[in-house]
Image 1 (spheres, rainbow, N blue to C red):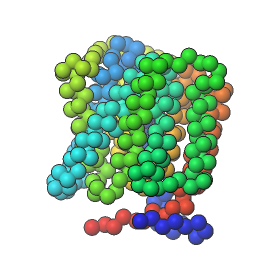
Image 2 (cartoon, rainbow, N blue to C red):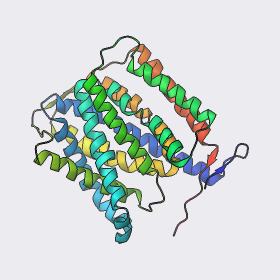
Image 3 (spheres, rainbow, N blue to C red):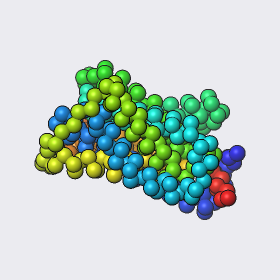
Length: 323
């Protein structure tokens, strides 16, 4: 059980845990935010979303798997007990979220596509409220409202901007996967080390995507043409390696570490900074310059994250018991 404190300051250990969690969350958000711009360079040369996400997830799985096995320390029973959880994580949080997001990027700009995916924090709040009775406080709801208003401005709906319905549909699919990612990543009760959960999910995601490709349900098209960005052309393998090592391997492991320290609700709102990172990377790599109203929206998103943090800091999370 958690202890609600409204006046007493947070213990030093809790403060340290919060600081580490915020650092991991920001690393995860920044690295995830790079994925859309990098993938767009490959998609424009003829790569299909399926091939792009498969190679990205497979490279990450190959890198993280040895670390996951080491973190288990021979506790195979722990992995067997959590088979269903790992499969769900791999199917929805890894394969589903990434494939839907890259599919959305085919129909719309990176920033708006990611924005739709990151309605996930609202879904997390509702899930925790309905499933676990964790009713959000007034401060948390205020922060959520600010973030939601900022996201609307980033999407720039009011200006009548052209919005692709297929892109929106794919983005909503990515939202379901992202919400699953935040909820499962924050679950400490399963006992799985972060590296083990990340490795298992990435392996399952690779197998699912590979199977869909083999049976023809997901087109797999790739090539060796150079990828073109605002900074110039680069060999195809450069964005491929960055997608696998940075935007998947680093992102998933640091994201799980953040969720364990912050909880799914706060971690999901801090992860909204990924939207801002994606907009910046899209500007630098794709010349997709955000409008002034989108920049104002970004400021509101950050303000919302800060307010949510203030609301969540009233809840002191107990330190995990080391066995």
